[in-house]
Length: 189
Image 1 (cartoon, rainbow, N blue to C red):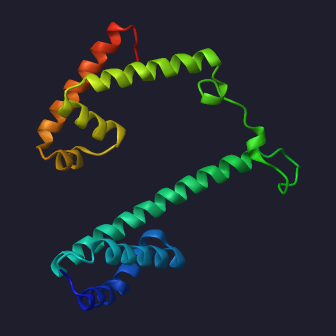
Image 2: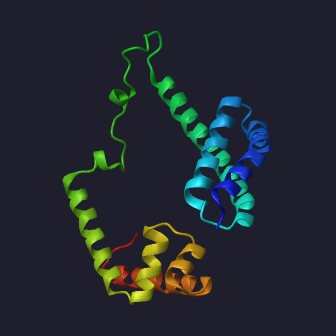
Image 3: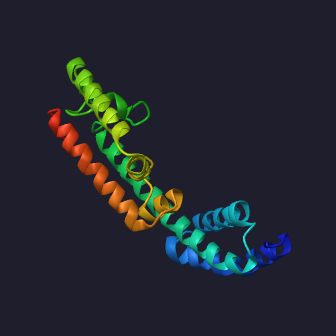
């Protein structure tokens, strides 16, 4: 376990290099500083109890993930800003423009769904849930972790205490069993 002094020394040692690394990646000093600070806080809060020799690699992984997250957030922010700015009518002042008022329910969206479609969807979900309950315990566990909790194969294997190959086998068997059971009920997805 790293002592507070070892953690502090590590952060002081990597601070300048990490900042340069982030600046080179995002090309913005303020954003780079935020990224490095967030990475340092995450290392201290979540991984401060790890051995000191593991901390440099953990910090680099956290820093790289924080940079990727920054790019993802920027991309999403840019997308929505562009989308909403294009929705404003030409020649109108943007102060009182509300883009949500211009959106109509799209076909296939829950808002555009009729009562009959909503009931049908609820019945299908009920049938799927009943079939998932019928699965053997290990298949159900693998299926739920992979597809409901959205864990990757390695995480699922770790949680289940088995190999990655076993997780793949359990998931495959579960999906095939569900497909057969649902098809027998006339449900095709």
